[in-house]
Amino acid sequence: MNLKEPVNTRGSIGDILVARGQLQPADIPRVIERQKAQREPFGAAAVALKLVSQTDLDAALATQFGYDYLQPGDASISPEVVTAFKPFSSAAEEIRALRSQLQLRGFGTPEGRNVLSIVSPQPLDGRSFLAANLAVAFAQQGQRTLLVDADFRKPRQDQLFRTPNSAGLAGILAGRVGTEVLSPIAALPGLNVLAAGALPPNPQELISKPAFVQLLQNAARAFDVVLVDTPATSTASDAEIIAARAGASLMVARKHKSLLRATSQLAQQLQQGGVVLVGSVLNQY
Image (cartoon, rainbow, N blue to C red; front, top):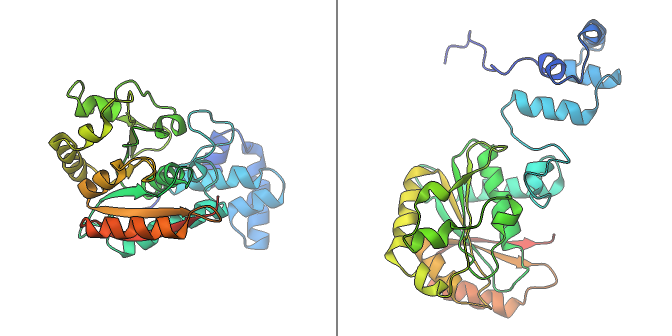
C-alpha cells in the first residue's frame, strides 16, 4: 500500500452529510470553527452544534467506512434482522462477537471450513433469527455470504428478507430451476439469500439427494461464508441430514425454554454422525 494515497475514497463526513441534505453547506464554516476550537472530529462538532443528529452521523460514518445498514422505516427487510437496522445495539454487538468467535475457530477463513448449519432441538429456539443476523454480520464485514433456507417445514428467511419463495432450494433440488433463484439483497452488498421455495411433500428425500451436496460444494467455492437454516430436530430429522451434508453445525438453545436433555442429546447425535459442532449459543431474545 502506498501510504501517500488516501485510504478512504467515499468522501468526507461533511460531504456525505451535505449530499444527503442533512447538513447545509452554509453551516460548514461554523462546524470547522468549533472543530478547531474544541479539537474534536467534524461529526462530533456538527452534533454538538445540533446541526445533525447522532443517528445521521452514525449513518454517514457507516457510509464512509463501507459498513452497510438500513435506516428505520425501510421495508425491504424485516425489523427482526437487527444487525441490518440497529448495528450499534447490544444484540448486534453480540452477533458480531459470535462472528468473531467462529472466525477464531477457523470458520469463514481461507484456511478453514465455510459451510455451517444452524440447528436447535425445538421450534422457536431462534435458529432463523440467528442465521439471518449472522449472515448480515458476515456480509457487513465484506465477505461474500450465502444464506440458505433448508427448513422445508416452516421456512422463515423469505419473510425476513422479503424475497420470492416460489422456487428456491426445493426447485433446485427437484431439477426445475438453477441458481438464478438466488436473491441478492440490494441494501446489503455481498449478501445473497436462497429461499426454501414451495414446500415439498418429500423434504427428507430432497435433502438426501446428491444435488444438495453438490449445491453446498459449489456454494463453498463461490462464497466466503455459507449459512444453512434448518428445521427443529424435535419436529423432523431433516436437520441432522443437513448438518451431515454441511459438515459443521452451530447449535442454538433458548434461555428459559430449551430443555437441557434435548440439547445434550442433539449435540451427541451430531457428533456421532461426524458433524463438527463448532459451538453453541444461548439465545435470550
